[in-house]
Amino acid sequence: MKPVLDIHERPKLAKWIILSMQHLFAMFGATILVPVLTGLSPSVALVSSGLGTIAYLITTRGKIPAYVGSSFAFISPLISAMTFGGPGAVMLGTFSAGIVYGLTSLLIMAFGVNWLLKLLPPIVVGPVIMVIGLGLASTAIEMAMNYDASTGEYVDTALHFTIALITLTVTIVSSVFFKGFLRLIPVLIGLVTGYVISIFAGLVDLTPVQQAPWFHIPDFAIPYITVDPIYSLAIIGIMAPIALVTMAEHIGDQMVLSKITGRNFLKDPGLHRSLLGDGIASVIASFVGGPPNTTYGENIGVLAITKVFSVFVIGGAAVFAIVFGFSGKIEALIASIPVSVMGGVSILLFGIIASSGLRLIVENRLDMSENRNLVIASTILVIGIGGAFIEITEDLVIPSMALATFIGMILHGVLPNKTIGYGNGQLFESVEDDQNNG
Image (cartoon, rainbow, N blue to C red; front, side, top):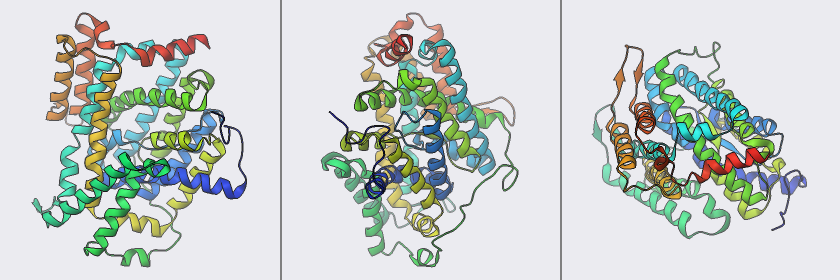
């Protein structure tokens, strides 16, 4: 199908604004939810996503119309990093995630992608993604039921959980039954609905929103200026393995985007440039206090519906994200959202993360009747969700998620019949073929 606007076509100003705002709304709910859940600044996350997207477009030579924003996969590691050392620890973790992307990009450029398949086969990646989602399940429920960590008690549980369930229901209905663009913003629709109901329930104080200025400087965490980075191998150990796992999802996004636009982005500008763009976006985020960034599936959906593939439109959305990040009223509005509303949305989102790991197993046609696959998946799930850890020194602790990933990789490496763990290997093989043909 012929695109309405191709990748390098620029729309007229009025149309440009409208199309860019569509992308902003598509990513808005997910981008602000990550910092809210992890204790970071939503304004900084918006600014870093905008800056990261611009850097991504430049890195990929303006050839891939993709938006980057806060990654859900890093929620649990970010919470751990904040507990360990606050913004200074998050800064190191986000930077290390970006460096892992960058180093992987260089290795792919030099040696292709088959080594990544051998290191992280579907039988390891799928269960680890499930651990990421299921490990956050208790957090979602505590938010939905308004758990007060300071007292260890649930407060007004009936009211808050009712609002959470309404928010969840609206989000599900939007995702399943709505058509067109509305189907792409279920998180935003759910948040708005839950927020409005919370106002009528007396759970929202709009005074801070009314008093907040239209313009303000976000609470940037700039290394050695506003925040001193905390250097710890434990933080790197928490974040780096997740960066490896999210690369599999990144490759899948690029394949879908290639099909939608009728191009082969894995070949031109190349997977290595796309991964490098993600890495640079995360490094930029680390220098301002934002979370790690990744390409967004929501915005890929917008491209599919509108047939507008213009990188100028994506760039416009990035500029709007930066502008919104400097609005005091928007930050105050986000801060006033009740925790139960966030919990209602999180129940679905965290479940989707876990389900996407299961989907990866199914799509790669892994035979789970094989004892080898069953052993690896079972071990990863129990170690990861169970919270196992190894304390090497007082400052070096391997947390459950990283430990589960490492043990899964080791099991895959030492157990016989490795080909069983690759399934059909379709995802990585297609990338390798594309690069070899290039």
